[in-house]
Image (cartoon, rainbow, N blue to C red; front, top):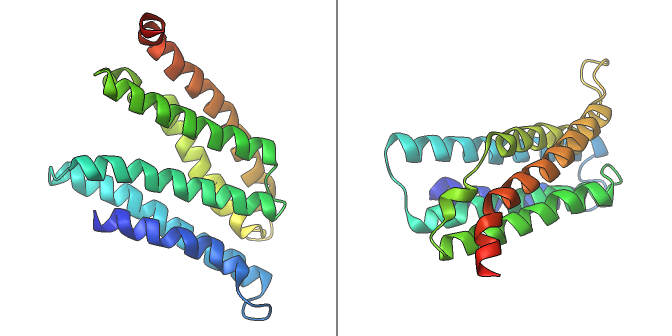
Length: 184
C-alpha cells in the first residue's frame, strides 16, 4: 500500500516539474526530471505487485487503489504531453477513454460476479508496456546518444499503444458481451 500511495504522490511531481517558475530548470532538466520521476513511479508499480504476490499481502482497498494510481499516472502524463505538443489529443483521448470505459466495465462485471471475464489479457499487458516505454521517452524528448530520437520513437510506440488500446477494448467487450446482452 505504501508503494501505491507513493505512486499517487509522484503523479503531481511529474506534471509540476513543467510548471516551476521560469529559470528554475532548463527545458532539458524538466524533461529529465519528469522522466526520472515517472520511471520511479512505474518501477514502484511493478515492485508493489511483485511484493504483494510474493508475500501474499493483498487487500480489497489495494486492489482498488493500484489500478486507479496507474490510470492517474498515465492520464496525467498524457494530458501534460498533449499540452506540450508531444502527443496528439486524439491518441490521448483513445487511451484515456478506453481506461475509463474498461474500468467501468470491470466495476459492473464485479458487481454481477463476473469479474474474471474481464481479467487483464496479454494484449492489455503489451499495451501497458508500450505506454510505459513511450511516455518517459516523450517526457524526455531529447536524443539519446545522438542517434535515438526519443520524441519520434515515443510517438510511434504510443501509436502502437493506441492501436492495442482499441484492440484490447474490443477484446474485453467481446468477453463481456454475453453478460451485457443478458442484462440489457
